[in-house]
Image 1: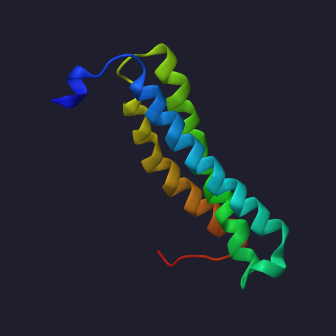
Image 2: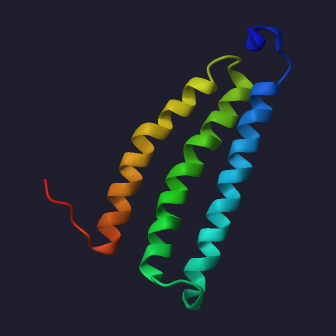
Length: 101
């Protein structure tokens, strides 16, 4: 009901806010990965950096789409579902942790 009354770029503002928060989380993970003395498990910090990139990329795609496609950009956030699955698999593979099938 409220979403039908809102027009004029609020979708882009929402996506930009999500992207900014995710980007700051990624920057924090990068900082912790470069300063292993601040973490208990330095390998964990590197896994978070990898997973962070797989979080920021779909949000950036959704933000760019919000400039061109009026209502389809929020649907692009569904890319987060396979992105997180791929990101967790890649980060486990980088750390050498294997999960039993």
